[in-house]
Amino acid sequence: MQTQSSTAKKAFRLAVIPGDGIGKEVTAEAVKVIEAVGQKFGRAFELEELPWSADHYLQTGTTIPPNGYDTLREFDAIFIGALGDPRVPDNRHARDILLGTRFELDLYVNYRPVKLLHERLCPLKGRGPKDVNFVVFRENTEGVYVGIGGRFKAGTDQEIAIQEEINTYRGVHRIIKYAFEHAKARGLSKVCMADKSNAMTHGHALWQRVFREIAPQYPSIEATHYYIDALAMYMVVDPGQFQVIVTNNLFGDIITDLAATFQGGLGMAASGNIHPGKPSMFEPVHGSAPKFAGKNIANPLGAISSAALMLETLGLQTEAAAIDAAVLAAVTAGQGTPDIGGNLGTREVGSWIAGHVERT
Ligand code: NAD
Ligand code: IPM
Ligand code: MN
Image (cartoon, rainbow, N blue to C red; front, top):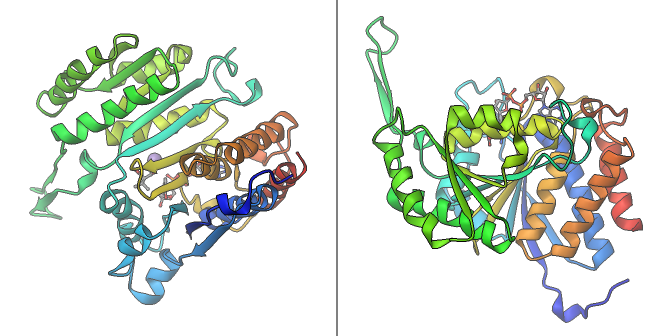
């Protein structure tokens, strides 16, 4: 039933970049679900597909057009499948399209919720949904990802390769602040920062300083710190202690693949690349899994949950909740792809979720 007047309903313009490999397949299912949500709740979603991908690069020589980032800025949000193709060994198109968008649109918050939906999916002995429910905030515009460095005497036995890690006061401050604000807004009581300041004594001393500066501003939130190696260990042995983890770009990348396994694997994990109040980009945590491509076996739930994050960020809480409820129902009913013990195909899971959204 539609309860709001049509004047209250703005149309949302969404850019869709399916990308490569299974990215295309899972994006098709996320789109199916977004369209079902639009029907169900009377929302106008104007989806525009952009062809930027390995195929497009190999055909045209262009990774992203010269005005590509400006094009993206005109949308309310961006949905992206995955990028990566063995025919582009230096991954240059992914660097321009995915990392380039994170940098150019200044999407400094990489928001990666880690929520186990059913005990059966968790590889950790005896752990269930109450033990695995936290979020990771990964700094998304700095660190080793900026690509500053170079190689000297490349290809010789005297080669020197330098890859700089960039940490700025502004960059570290805004992600740590965001993590505390998130905790405060959701009534959470703990924030854990992870770095490697015992070895990276310059860059990560800055993380220490900023964390010590911000934490006292939130007296009701317990601020803890682990070195990243210990954090990885504690995530496995005692995941229930975590509510909010904040860390740098590289460490956040690594620990969110680890955390994805707690949820049932990479196919389940969702993410948002966010600049509050500005066009942001949503994508599953997984990559293009070339070996799985074109077989209708990729799990689309991470992509579909990323679509829910996108709608939530656009202020469509009810619509996002309808998708989350459908994903939970599918997992509970065993209606999934083989990686989570089901026997449905990618398309069938997408149709199941869309059907659930329409019916309930
Ligand atoms: P990957 O995430 O593509 O796949 C690793 C493994 O995880 C797969 O072999 C599969 O077993 C499993 N998996 C991943 N997604 C799944 C899904 N939806 N359903 C079921 N199982 C799934 O990582 P990779 O093999 O290291 O990388 C492949 C390519 O993807 C590379 O080119 C890499 O650079 C790229 N990549 C892109 C992104 C992105 O676009 N955001 C993220 C990670 C990797
Ligand atoms: C991710 C991916 C990317 C990253 C790759 C494809 C560059 O692994 O989004 O997690 O490292 O950020
Ligand atoms: Mn990754």
